[in-house]
Image (cartoon, rainbow, N blue to C red; front, side, top):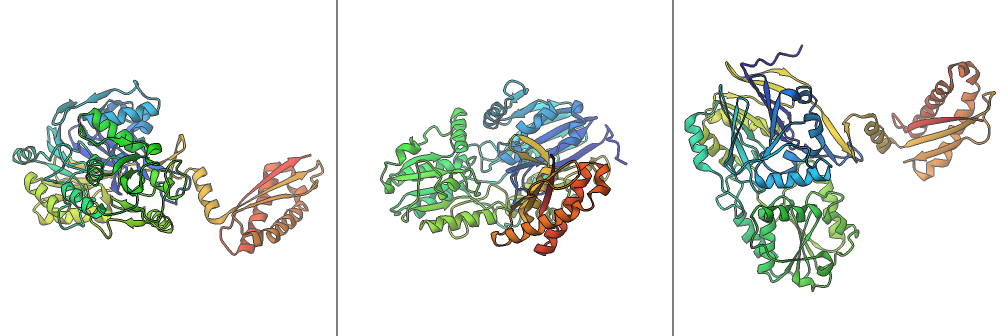
Length: 554
């Protein structure tokens, strides 16, 4: 039986991002009210055929939306705000964000047809808001996107520091540096709990500076004769500026390729950043520029099917093609789960004869997440009583908890999605496991991850399908030919299997009179079972192809 949320107790509840990287959705409860922090997506894998994006199921908080005070966004990465436009109709709450994040969110809401419907509140950098018993202050932290923020969440039972995504970059190049003074001040004030990013915890050192990447890329790309292609995260504005500056220094025109990349650059300019960004050329004009005078900055660093780099590699781009003298640089880290997809893309590029450079063999990227040195420094400044690692797989979060214990933190709690944690009063602990699940974005529709349509696709993907159409007269006899369509079955096997299926159908009609009174649905099911049995015997695979039988009355 679910535990009652007591208004005098302070709770933390992740519905996404705990035990996984991406899909962050975090909740805090006090005084009978809820506060949501972030609402993001993640990329689907091959286990979800036809699905591009997945997101947390907000059903638990959706049932309590009347008590939801608001959604506060830490920054503009997709795994923190990408689900807002899809899930807000179920939440109907006001949203708070700093200027750059809000600019990108407004664009997404407009695309979703929600412009003007969502109560949006822009908060200045370092600004504060009060929602019920929660006093929330934005604290600037460097990350691989503009306006990364941690949140100081003050409650009657103590202060929480929700880090969001962060690192300590002494030379961020674009945007604010981490507000170390605010962090030290918070530590002196007292921190009940830190809810902290775990993504890069296995890196024993700090994550490094964007300044160092800029210098490395300039040296690495100098001297290449062919066209230069560099793909990175569209949201990493500092990296995009780095690449544009490198291109300018190497006397190359710069071309932005990819819708999200252009949108992010425009949003940054709108918010006062990138004021000295080099002039860019269009994709059409770039086609006529000498190969040694052009640098393309592209989307698709994770091998996304519709992104620029994949379209270029598969010769599907209208203006851009590859040649043997070209160089392609992946200035990003491989997100866990994307290894196979990127390996395929790297091989495709190699087949074109281009040089492929990645973080595995060259210094072309620094992470936006803290290594152990940065984590140790953050814990030293804040001195929290409780450590709650999030934003990582279980192994990441467990290691951060172990480090926190080593650094003198009294309590460590490692949650999974749905873990309801009582932070105060008393000893902090997981007091319940609430409903949590994942949703899949299927074109314009949001479906449960285990929806029958997705399960059916997965079965067809692995085992193929057989569709049988049988015409029966009023005496339940076969009229005409039995039509058999096999999908995903080897051509060499198709004719033999088709004949076996037709024989099974004809044999089954001998028993139809017994089942005739039960209706055509039952007759079709009996035929389906018989065909499926034949397919399993023929292929030696279980469960065998997905079988559908259609009956037509003539």
